[in-house]
Length: 383
Image 1: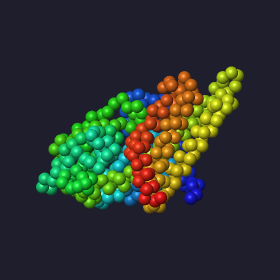
Image 2: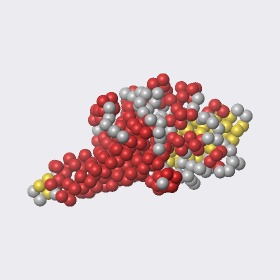
Image 3: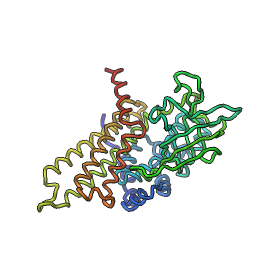
Image 4: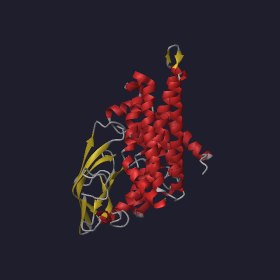
């Protein structure tokens, strides 16, 4: 498969790069990292330029492109600043489920404002007791007349403190076996009575992409808030993850690339024993190894995204891309700190922030261990 980007794709990449060079200053990234605040105005600026809605259809205000174009934008933003990049490009998180399974009314109500940058979305899947295991839900939704009454709690929810609505995975049939056959996705507006959000603070990385806990106490929503077919929520979320892990891989590639470039430039300038340290084999070979791994991760990510856009989504390949790219990001950002020496450990040099942010790519949207389980399951079927 040929991964030479088209002229149009190169233009998108260039436009995002120019935006980041103007808006993503190192000082701003450090400021939002320290304050642990969402860069809402920056998100809206990016949305108005169409960068956050690249994969959405034009009829809803999107740009009509695909996952590959989103990956290009995500990579470029995370290359410029890992925390700001994730925060900006995660503003539409989980809304793909509405796009894929929602009614025309739901799409008009939620997707169109997302494309304009007026809304931020959140997927409320993870629970305190279950983590990556979404096959069991303690959050329940019980039918009461023309409404659903939701009770339960979710944790580690990206965008929870700033979102306009949640896509909540609930147990709607408590009697079915196995239990995941009785799960549904329900849209819950944040201002609905009974919804309580607590911001989680002091995260290791991606601090501008704010995270929270959400509790639902007798939250009443209309029947029309069910997304797609009743009791198909588990399959909807798994289908979403099969796609969304490609942009997470792109986050990792961008973070690795940004750290590599900073380390490469530093090694050319920093002198020890009368020579730039890039002339020392211990440093130059490490930089070469970083470049090799980043390029391999990038090509795997692009291949994954291209197949998704061709409606040939391969869950095994998506898991491979996320697992490999996230490991590369953690290793490369660690090596970049080592090349910087003591300066790499200091916040003012920004490189340590790349390492802190890279770690999350091995954890969210399915840990690396979960990706390995997926890969092995498909290998057993195909080998």
